[in-house]
Length: 419
Image 1 (cartoon, helix red, strand yellow):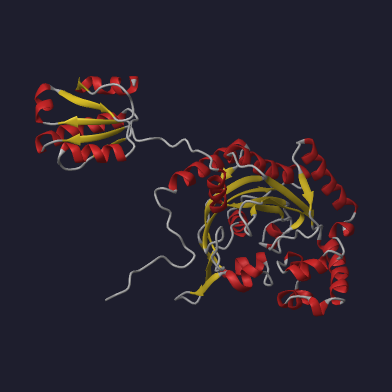
Image 2: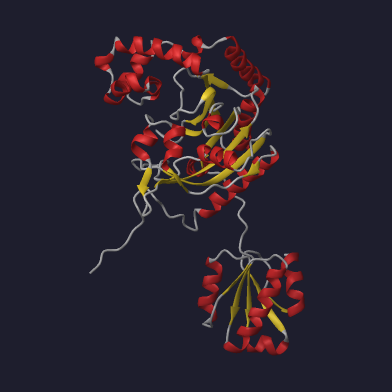
């Protein structure tokens, strides 16, 4: 006897009881992207592996451990996208979206990483992101942060805080890298295994270590913002000034480097204390070199991505009531003769915008009314051969205090709307 097939580990079904939360979140995200004049872009789920190796960085956790990568039958190395900024940049360069112009783009869809599944962290997960390409000023940085703040407000999510840092330019990071390595070499015996391995290859990733002992060592480490040049310092100061002017609270976090190598200058994360270890619900920053590295012109850019699963978890945690459209009508036909007329009338009701569920087939009235009540419908419409002969339908309120009544076919809609 064969065993029951189940979903792939870390890839979850979205059930009808969960879907309304997702629909609500997705609607809010689309509306806010539109409010900031961002246009949607959709990229393929499958990309060439080299895109992410070259964009994200070979020494990142994503590339080293987490990508679903494979060689296809034609010998091409492909992977399922682990994030979408690299894909958006690839698409923009390929189709000339960034050539001597600017672009505001948003996306939403599934991403894939072979991580250890836990609450808020899955192997297939959905992200929403906004990317502002072609603007070098601090206004673009702050605009995408303000979009995040607007999302929390629209969703009714509270206690989300912004953390901020600057990684500067290549020159800044080179100077800082030297100072950081010199400091860490004094504590090499106390570093965790991953940090020891990255000491020479990618020491900035050590700042992102989740090991408590390593984090205690880093408390006394050099701070990257001390190595910014005058122009970089001015940009970061303007970011903070604009956030202050918008009355958005933030904390400077000198250990914030993000897990991707394409970031430059401003980086940020929105965090909550309500989701345990998976406390980052939105993250982003500048990636001024990525477009050029992917074959385009030198083009400044910034953006963010947020996990929709975590937004849904927050909604549920906050116990925010959703305004979900209720079922208006459950239509009951008592015999085969009335069935066809019930179908016709149900279609007319749907034409006016009502939601109507048919109880397909015939059955005892008592059992059908139980189904109607359990559905949450506002009304049950009952049609049998007697009603059909009289040209009426019985309208039975399921949620109100008024009595059932027989109503002519052409008056049903008016009665339902009046109630």
